Amino acid sequence: MDFSLTDEQELLLESVHEFMDQHGSEAYFKECDREGRYPTEFITAFNEAGFGLLGVDEELGGTPVDYMTQTLFNMELYRLGAPINFLGLSALAIHDLQSFGNREQLARVCEAVQQNKQGMCMAFTEPCAGSDSAALQTTYTRRDGKVYLNGQKTFITGALESPYALVQSRTSEPVDNPLKAFTLWMVDLSKPGITINKLHKIGMHMVSNCEIYFDDVELDESDMVGIEGNGFMHLMDNFEVERVNATAVMVGTAWCAYEDAAKYVTQRVQFGKPVGYNQLVQEKLVDMYSKVEAMKYMVLKAAWDADNGNSLRLSSSVLKRFCAQMANEVVDDAVQLHGGIGYTDEARVSRLWRDVRISRIGAGTDEIMVKNAGKVIFKQFA
Figure 1: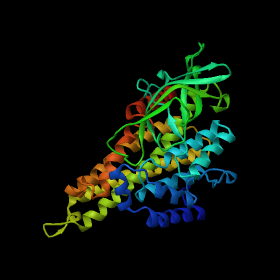
Figure 2: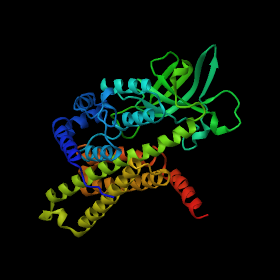
Figure 3: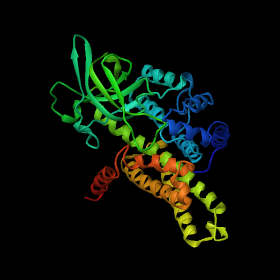
């Protein structure tokens, strides 16, 4: 297993640095974060640079690359301070539609990305169905040749910035197998009967988080994504890939915080010398470096597995829990090393600290990751 960069990957990462130098200033992100504003100018430049559709066929305006390249790209982008989770939504939507959608659906999302929008939000979570995905109550019903959607979704990231939502719902008809009751639908969020309310949250102020209400929203059969009754299995596939994608963001974010802290302690003078000379400070830096390196190679291994068709069922859950915890520890230590300035919005680490906390909840909580991974490990030895 060789993680050496190809010439093409090196050029791509160099272009990320050039792009962030030109368009990714912390002053700009600080302004967007303070105002709760979607970074439209950044997203526009990002797509114009050709980054928005990595992994997509050329005829749809994309650049076909393997999962390893996408992972390296994401780690480097967030290492340079990109705001958490603005990019992952479009990448995940594209993966889902490439995996079990159709060409026309994929083309619609790619067109939205090229118009500098989030391609599609993931509308799975409900007030009574978070970790328990099989408990969702949003239903679809067929009447007079149409499909009608009713229900409520919550904590939906990017709902205000996305023209479409991938909605998991259950049939109103009786089924023999409860897990065969679920089907995915691609829903145009401009349709009548849809109400979106913005929620206020601790971090990630540059992208919305919302409740979505569906009141007899009319759909066509062509809006179905994948196979009817296979929605639950499609969702499980979504989660595995989402978790690997999310961990690349966590690595980059922790890496960014570590480097900010390492630079700061060489400049902050107390008692006549930089605080970085203190052994306890050096111990924190060594631990932070070790955690970032461990995260990095675990994520690259998962990307290699994805490219080689290996199962991610165990590794995605273990990876997601480990990286979420390590990223939070690293960023928290970075705030500590910054001292008082780290608790103000003058320091980038304060934004990273607020934003990274969601990583232990979104895409599966730490506790659910233990349940998922423990079940697989137990079966291996039972």
